[in-house]
Image (cartoon, rainbow, N blue to C red; front, top):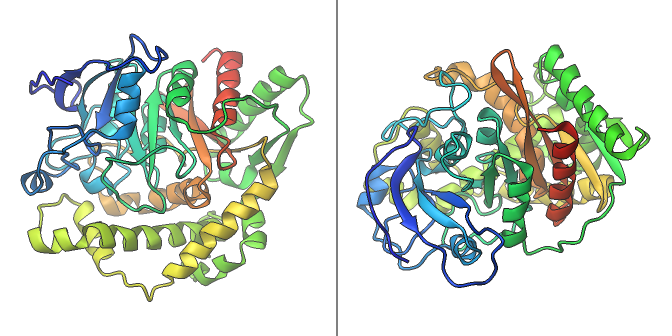
Length: 428
């Protein structure tokens, strides 16, 4: 694989531009398509930067290429560069203190979302056909929503993370972005190791309490769009069910009670069980981040941007005494509970994020309420390991809006097929 290096930033999305031509002939599924990769994936002969210059200075070039990238090259796609990411994958904003912020193609005065910011922008700005990112706590789903494109977080453990710098292994996934559902599914055909047979939709569950985290205008509009699309596809709305997913989780995930603190039960309209779910996810994420990178951070003392520095220092303070085992029990119980709810052919609909992308350079403290709502939504798939696709639904008040569909662990192909059907019905 020859690398033709040049320093170039298109829309601020790229760390480096180069060309990795297709190799071999496993299939021609992706012939003629171009893609970019987040700077968390190893490429042979290059230093993987992990969003921070001090990381690059203290690490050697990769000796091999991440297996997902190899699979894409073997399927006929051409890689044209590495993209900017949030430092150490520890933010959902998309602002990088050292390398700049990739420009959101649909809302230039707003953040692009992170931590896979450059990959989302490269797709949204039509520089590449698709791009690879990673999603631990929301790093594909959030930028997909903010940039008005499709993004998938696959089922945990389904797509190889070989050759990818870990953030927190209990939640790390390799996801991807595309501007349309057809290409999203094409890439899935290459990367998913699950059954590619399609099955019929049996139930479509709308999480009403999650939609209440949006303002009332968006709430009603998104639910209406979803209902109309299901009715057009299946001729009736009998399979549409409306549930309070927060109540269901509280009743069926008993170990979550350990995380039901006064803070998680505050009256900001976030269901207390989802706040607790987010707390369990973030605790285990912090602990695993420390296990992976605490020694390096302590030794190198890297320069970290606002928000990231505080988050990293907070992670370094975690210990195994802080309900880490309880967090893992929550994961097991939530997977079982949501599997019972959806079965193998059910869909759960939630908002991807609680609102439009925040304005650039918004103070971290100002975003705390928004982040709390966002992680309450993102933790459903994050903790359960379910697959989730963020679907763009156009522009409202000059800002992108989206919705997410989730399916059972391992039902990624089924989910992509439902997303494609909805895409076709809505003429997105």
